[in-house]
Amino acid sequence: MGSKIGAGIAAVVLAIPLLIGAQATGIVGQLFSSRSSPGSLTCTPDGTPTGAVPGMTAEQLGNAAVIVGVGKQRGVPEPGWVVAVAAALQESGLRNLSYGDRDSLGLFQQRPSMGWGSPDQITTPTYAAAKFFERLQAIPNWQQMSVTDAAQAVQRSGFPGAYAKHEGTARAIVAAVSGVRCDPAPAVAGTGNCDMIQAASPAAMAAVNYACGQRGLPYLWGGTGSDGGFDCSGLTQAAYAAAGIALPRTSRAQYAAGPHVPDGQPLLPGDLVYYATAGRVHHVGLYLGSGNMIDSPDVGQTIGIRPYRHPGDDYYGATRPAARVAP
Image (cartoon, rainbow, N blue to C red; front, side, top):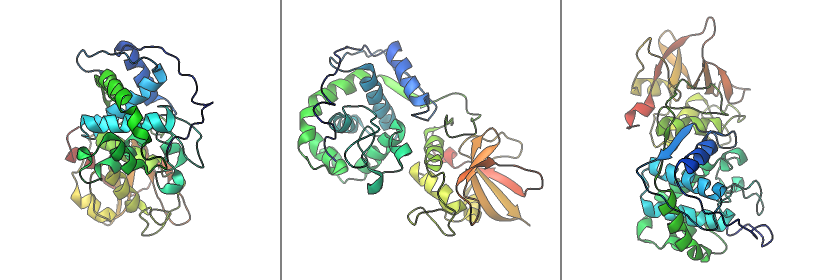
């Protein structure tokens, strides 16, 4: 990776100090709920910390707050936030870019061709930050590394020492935005689409976000994503793996694993919905809300959004894997 911005592109940053508080809350809330950054999260000041970072625009500090908010959700300690913000400063100037060197995109200039995700995913700040932290946390003893070495271990840049010069600014930015807390929006009925995701917990949000990113991929019997497609349970297993929750491989085993949603209780986005013939589960989808699910239905079809109920269906019940972790 490395810096993907030419001198002309990176030239001028407006020197507008921004106090972190109600104004930043609105900015961050808009970033999380906009079409370009799906994921209905409410970001609010946590406590009374305020700060100003000369040279940083509202857009840049908003993106930094997204990174910190996602880091908090994933349980990453503060040094990891500094690493991520330093990396984003180097790669994009803390801007969600729709261009870059070769196929590099987004805050971290992640590349679809290198397995970081689809272009839509990579240009979703919540997804991009989650992928950065996922790889950071997989590095043994990353907390004992310097900021630049930890960032390089994730990014594998052609300029491995470039992150060091951003460490001081990254620490100042993290101090300024660390009082922003990002939680799922209270409304959890779900919109039924992937443009404005709602969920009751970070785990459910991560699972839905992952599944939405797979739309258009083909049904592939036995597919788990690594081979270019998914079957129904391969998709739900991978979606919850992205949320840090291990599910069994088959729809039948996933249903047995629970926890089950009691009959008559409203479904929540992220719940898994099952279909069975004579009590034998044969299909699973991931509920989005508003009567819709996302699933990988059958041979010759692609992953997409569909009603989870229709006349004559063999709907069997639902489970709530996200309930295995605290919201």
